[in-house]
Length: 55
Image 1 (tube, rainbow, N blue to C red):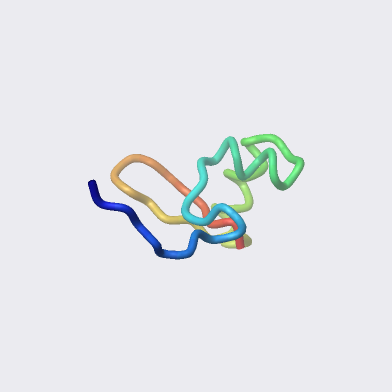
Image 2 (cartoon, rainbow, N blue to C red):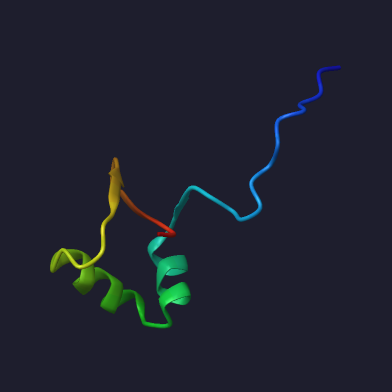
């Protein structure tokens, strides 16, 4: 058995979905889509999926 001793981040990191981004911002998913198209928030496209960072 292999165990990891690497420290774990205090906050969750990584990419989040459009729905999660909308919940964090307190807006609807359509507003997140509009902000993305106006280049007001950054996103990452992975295939057909659109993801956001928590930053």
